Image (cartoon, rainbow, N blue to C red; front, side, top):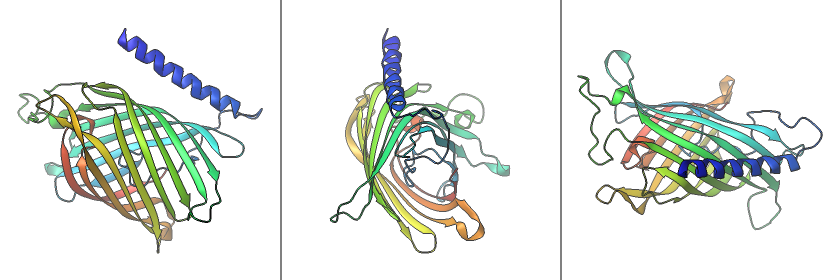
Length: 291
């Protein structure tokens, strides 16, 4: 009954968003998929869908992310869109002989609606207000890289739930941004309306900024307030700040306009679903492809 109610509630939300898109449509073709989304993806948010290979510099791990967002419909004025999100975030262990067994993987899919409008305010150094609302499902799984080498069972994680366990969430995520050419600031809120394991605070918050610097370089930061899992209570209590700082360069000079080389410093609650209870800190250096 609970699952049926949850699916019904999600369907109602999807139908409502679709009706909004129809009201903004004209007689022209309603669906015209494009990867050039109205809302520009956030540079430093580690949960933004992207294609990237990011080896850890201080441990033998590698983040391999494959995903994208696309607008299925954009209004003629290019100020409103309805789209989809698909993403995977894989944590690979580095082993001998250039092997990278997958330790854990997180999957996301969902829909979004986005909008933007020009603003004129002499007191603000911005000329555009934009926003995006996502409705998403996310789930995670341990893979063969988290199995004991002798095949005796899963590698135990003392601070987390007993393995195996189900990690699954459905959530709404809203972000609003102020921007002008070369810089952007944003703030957002996420509400989880269904989760396994239970006992999770449904509210979390995030904010960030991006700044273009000379020579096709940039710096960006994303900070989140995420609930802290208390293993003794089997629920979350309190919040912890989670930072991701990124500096990078776009390879425009050699004709690779959609490729970035970036360095990240991450500190806070893990972005991997199976390690949702685990604080970690690491630095990565790798390549991001903006589809």
